[in-house]
Amino acid sequence: MRDKIRIGVIGGSSPPSEALEQAFQVGRLIARAGAVLVCGGLGGVMEAASRGAKEEGGTVIGILPGQDFQAANPYVDIPIATAIGYLRNALVVLNSHVLIAVDGSYGTLTEISYGLIYGRKVFGIGTWEIPGVISTSGPQQAVELALKEAKNAYS
Amino acid sequence: MRDKIRIGVIGGSSPPSEALEQAFQVGRLIARAGAVLVCGGLGGVMEAASRGAKEEGGTVIGILPGQDFQAANPYVDIPIATAIGYLRNALVVLNSHVLIAVDGSYGTLTEISYGLIYGRKVFGIGTWEIPGVISTSGPQQAVELALKEAKNAYS
Amino acid sequence: MRDKIRIGVIGGSSPPSEALEQAFQVGRLIARAGAVLVCGGLGGVMEAASRGAKEEGGTVIGILPGQDFQAANPYVDIPIATAIGYLRNALVVLNSHVLIAVDGSYGTLTEISYGLIYGRKVFGIGTWEIPGVISTSGPQQAVELALKEAKNAYS
Amino acid sequence: MRDKIRIGVIGGSSPPSEALEQAFQVGRLIARAGAVLVCGGLGGVMEAASRGAKEEGGTVIGILPGQDFQAANPYVDIPIATAIGYLRNALVVLNSHVLIAVDGSYGTLTEISYGLIYGRKVFGIGTWEIPGVISTSGPQQAVELALKEAKNAYS
Image (tube, rainbow over all chains, first blue to last red; front, top):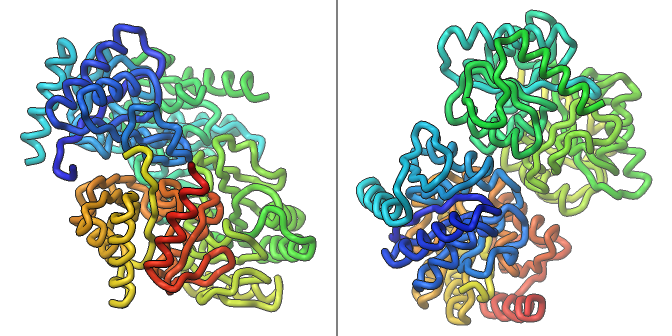
């Protein structure tokens, strides 16, 4: 478990249904590749990705804003409470080797920015198009590129 | 002091010289209006704005990433240590009624994003042009709009 | 303001009336000596000490657990919001040169412990008697010793 | 994994050898009971307990002060970086159902205090004897009582 690649999936808590489907596929592909999915542990993109990962027998770490670790969505295996509200967005990033952003609003933008501050590559699916975010054609390409990046950078 | 308007000035730590001059003017205008300047307490835009405010006899709060409150730039009157690194960016926002962004890189983008999450208006001078940031023609207009917004929203 | 001694006053939010009176005296003596009072910004010992300081024309910094800086007690001049709940206890300590503990429960004990971790001397008035806390006979002695310590250690 | 009892083991980073042996036994007993061990992820009591848990095939979550999750001791399965220094002590507590303290200095005392603030029972082995800490005769009794408490309180 310690040596597995960790892919952070970030995105909005109330996204359009297309983004939910994409996040679900991202979660499935991460689990199928044997990587660990890291997310913010709540709803929307976070939950859809978590559900995808669980469907493939993967492992999900959810880093929560509140002080109750049981508040995580039901697909999180390892919920971590932080009690620091939106400041926990930085922790989602720090605990991932690489990030995939799906859709997302300002919370996701803090995570993308922290990713670029802390030197994480960010692969995007219909998300903020700011310099530094690498746009992809969808879940398949995003997960492929993320795995490749993580293997190169951390092994 | 408690009832004064607080204007947060955010921006890069190593900006081009034009941004430093703009930040300096922003600081002067904030102090001249009797408002308190809040910033991250370090160099670049933060220091230039602080210097501007001090030149007009203003008050500067600097919210620092490290654990030593004496690490603030010399123009900060009230340095606050946090020991939480870049997570302190959220605290710069929370302690301001309204924000002015000058230039800036990814750290500034986390602050802009936190601003929009926490309901602060963000006025921009040559900074990230993302939805929600209100572009201005320069220091004069930015401070005028910021003061107007703060007076409307908090009195 | 930047060069003034900062004395942190820590203690319970619902202490017995004797502790409130002691905290009030501590606040008065801090202000009379020209030092800045730092506290957690809320009620009980924090508010009594703040009130004492204001009565003597002093300055009070209140470092709050929540995200709204207006939640501070009415005697705080410079409220600082943190949004990190009880984790802010460490920030009360970091922003003080020296600490005076009056009464207090487990929250105060985290602050005393952080004080001893971060190398702050802790002077006690009817508080936790653990190794490292220097017991005093009351407000007069506590403030005298705190001022002496702060002057020696930081000038 | 989600529904397993989590027992936090707290204690000093450079304790006497007797405490290391006790922490090791605590780790073994936690793993043997099928519970998850949560700790601060670094050396001393944290590492000894982690090593004990791994020797019995258990699972260890390590919540680290720094920003690099690879800095955890080699027996941690799930390292979590926080970048908030000693403020992370509160997170060790929040992510445990119940705590066992072995030896320990001021850092441990912040954790005991946070435990009592957040309503966690704290069982002690040669640690701070403050009101609220339940002294035990050693690893066997501490783990038995901790498991019993966790089962009663959270099921």
